[in-house]
Structures are given as structure tokens and as C-alpha cells.
Image (cartoon, rainbow, N blue to C red; front, side, top):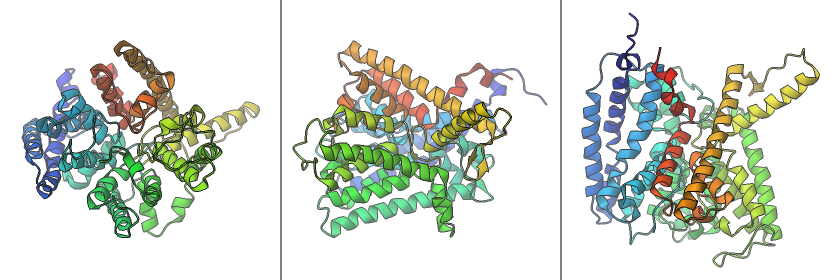
Length: 516
């Protein structure tokens, strides 16, 4: 039986929507976690109970659209894209019901929710404090990032039998990077293994952070802060219940967070191999070595600039003078580089105080990204590795036109389709970045923001690359609140498509997608 030529039957959007409904129904459990926090601190649980109820009701209603057809390739694209649109939409409910602060406005609530679930870490909160927002509400922000880090759909594949059929295709449309390793014979077991590793690392991070508090090395890193920051370290999210991010914590805390950020930006599948007694799979991995090399080079440049005093336009009053202080220079340089390369978005100091030499280096690092199969955003190291090797091959075959030289990564030949996909992705990524820079710059002029070129570029890459902070107006201690409603809605779209590797979303807007 062939497909009918109608819109309804060729792409079964009802099947896609019904699976989105299942996701919402299962995720309705999530708002109950901040309910417990609210009860602990004597705060109102109503915003989260309402959110949970709406998610259940909407999910059940959407599930009624389902019929016998399973998710094929086209329905998978639509299901994944809509999941990452609907989940942030319902994630606005606690902000809107609470009606506190800047996120009481629908556009701001959507921005904050999308930034949370996509682990971007950009914020429109005008004031981050427990006086302005409840412990439970700030915890909800943290939790949205943790849920989005490893992937909502990966979680659904892990726990829902109906998604295990075709689950590999579903995961690959959501997973950041070139692809995901199938660690076990069944994709559902692979999804469970990845989430177990993710959960274990989150628990380890919370234990280390709170352990520093118990040891007297971090007076303000109590249990709430330890859990809250663990929830946004491992997903490379960067939200913090502290207004000045990680700057408020001791050097010991900052040093402790650095390795967890680096781990969060590493392909989680490699840790599975380590746990299985194959540590060589980690140390011999081409992408992992390129990832560490890139961070090492950028850190050396920035730490050197800070140590020499060249990289600072001014020394912040609330930190020790950096020039000539090796530990400060290395810690601040490494922390900011690890945060930006992994797209975590934390800050241990305000790099708006750096001069343009150091800022430009950090800006370029925003395009690197972490590893495929990690929680990190942006372009991803593996793509740069493949591009570099493709360039080397082109130079070689220019001299030796008859030579056959395959491109290898991790002792495997990279097929030509993958190489093509990498170049297409990077081209589209840079094109959208360039267009977005112009649009946001013009919109800033229209609304009187008067952005510099570097600020406009950093706004575009910070949202498209799911990085979070940028420079100037959107520096690490500032907010995206001053932008117009159009600008914030446009950035919501950038965060959405950036989290899904752009092409998985753009394809559903093409004519070819909807036609035979």
C-alpha cells in the first residue's frame, strides 16, 4: 500500500504529537521535585503542582492522537523537534503561576525555560536572590538544565518500551555531535547506561562540593548549593542560584568544578568503556585528545595574558590582583576556558574586565564545543578534527592526484557522507551565526541598546551554541533582559535549533520533508 499524496498521511504528524504527549506525561513527575524543596523551606508548592497537572492533562490529550503507525524517519524528526519545543513551553508554567520577577512575563518565561532545557544558561532574571525568588523556583531552573543535559528523548528511550523500537534513530536526532555509540546490543540499554553514568557523575559532583563545605573550605557551599550546582555542572548548563555565579565561592570550589566541567564535555560513552575495564578507549580517543589539546592551548594563551597583566582592562575590586599571581592566572584562565569550551557558562570572574586581546581569544573558543555524545553544545571538537584532516587530505591529493587517502578517526575510516555532513553543518552553523549577528545588532540599534560588534557576535554564538554568557551587555554577571521581545524570541529559536544540531529542526521546514 503506497502513501496517499495528502499532507495528513504522508507525514504522520499525529503519531509524532502523540509521542510528544507521552513525553509530557512522564515528565510531569519533574515539577514534584521542587514541590519537596518548597515544603522544606515553607514556600508555596502551587506553581509546580499546577505545572505537573497541566503536563499530565496535555500529555493524555495528545496521546489520544496515536494510531497504529510507528515512528518512521520523518515522524522522528518532527517528534524530536516538537518535544524540544513543547517541553520548554510547559516549563514556563511555574514562572508564570508564581508571577515573581521578570520571568512573570510570558516572553521572559519562555526564554528562561528554553535556556534551561537546552542547557544554554542565558538568563533574563533581573535579580537572582532568595528574597526575589523562592528556593523552589531557583531549584526548578537548575532541574530544567539537568533534565535537558543528557537529553529528554534519550531519557524517554531509556524508560519507555514503545520508544525502544527505532530508538537509535530517535536518539541520533537529539544527541549532540556526529552520532552516538551503540554501547549495548539494545538501544534502550545504551540509553539507560548513559543516564546511569550521567546520574552517577551528578551525585559525585554534589558530594565533592558539599564535602568541601564540611571540610571548612567552602562556607557558602551548603547542601542546597551543592546539589543545585551539581545539577547544572554535568549538563554543562551554568545556571546558578547565586547572582555572581561561581565567583562567590572559594578557590577550592572553583578548582573542584573545573574537572567536572571537563568531564561533562567528554563523550559519556568513553566513561562506559572505562567502567568496563577499557581505559585505553578514553586516552586513545582522537576527539578526547583534541579536546584536551584545544583547552590547553587556549588556557595557556589566556593565563599568560592575565599573568602578564595584558589581558586585564581593569582588576575587579572583589578579586585579588591577577598580574604576577600564577595560581590566580591559571585558575581564572582555565576555569573560563573550560566553561566556554564545554558551553557550561559558569564564571569565576567577570571577563568583561578583560581587555579585547583576552576576550577575542575566549570568543573564538566559543566555536570549539565539547565532544560528541557529551552534554556540550556549539560545533563540537570531532567536527574540527574531521575538517582538519579533510584539509590535510586535500593538500596531499593536490600534489598526488592519483592517491587514495581515506580520513580516519579513532582507527576507523570516516565515510564520505559523514565528511559531507560535517562541512554542511559547519557552513549552516556559521551562516546562521552571521545572519543572527546582523539581525540582533540591528534590533539592538532599533531599541537603543547600542551593541558593539563583539557584543552582537557574542549574543548570536552564546544562544546558537548554547553557551550562555557573552561580552558587554550579556557578560557573565549580567542579563539578557534588556533585549526586545523580538530579540528574545529570536534567541529562543536559536537555542532551540542549536540544541538539536540545527539540521534536525530545519529539515521539517523544507518542502521535500512533506512531499513524496
